[in-house]
Length: 390
Image (cartoon, rainbow, N blue to C red; front, side, top):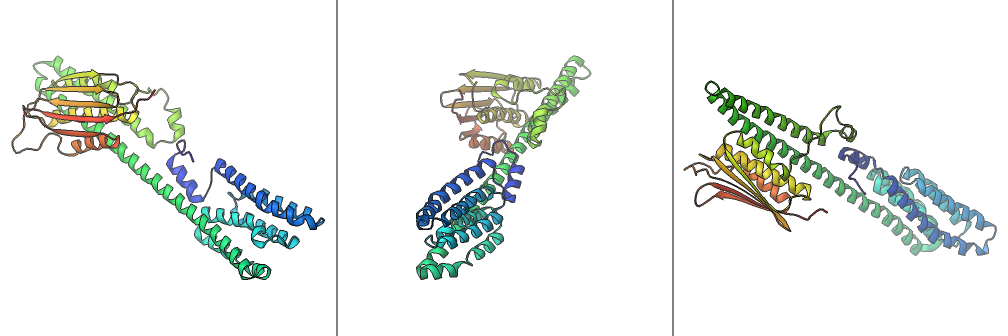
């Protein structure tokens, strides 16, 4: 079942109510109807050759069962009752048809009911289907009774197996939603942490030169305003994930849809850091266009977090080099600063920032290493595997 166009909450609600999609319901009906026509219909035609007057009535009852199966996804209990009654009528008209075969449509309905309705409901249906057992014993003896009870039990068990599969799928979907919301939370953290770090540095610089160099102070304030607007724009994009689909399509009147974070926007990211006085060199090799969205976003966020760490934790750092190499099967991202190691202190980004970068690389199947360099400075190097999108 394709769930990509549905919101998770809507999918869960449908699963809880036991609803099947229209496409699944149609396929279920066609398969069930074909089985009943092939097995029971053939048996009735063969057995009815010696009962010319009864044969039309038996055929009409079989067709009624096939038509009733059309509604088993919506009202399985009622369809089960109809098919049980008509199946017993077929068996009453043509004794040559076994009771198990006559109640084939009812057994299919029992399987569907067991799969999409609560277990307590299907248990009552199972008990009801066992009531004709004495008739099976009278017609076929112990063997007939055993065959009938076995087929009824198998039908109910198959439904329970399918129900367990649906419950596992539901659990996986819930877990996927939780992971997606956690990813969004990380996105919000990255945006806020980076932008606020840059704004704090810019605000401090503006305060230092406010009296002596007002133009430089104004430039810092303008950079703060630009960073704040950019962060608000990214937060708006991220929070759309929690909005109804209709609102996302319609958007807000006059709302400008900016492109999301991408390796193609590294220059804008570097400019925000340059406004603090730090020198940032950005070097690209290869073509980064056509990257999978997850890899493109992961690369951008790794660079963003590495620049944030250089601003906040790299003692004495005044220069950062960002290098992005797009190869055939991967993208390599390297961020190096020239800060000095602080004796007794933690490495730059040793907290949540470094863990977040490693997690981003891991989620796209890549790897990341980070640590001080022998000649001084700190380096973050990530390898993100890609499959090119044509």
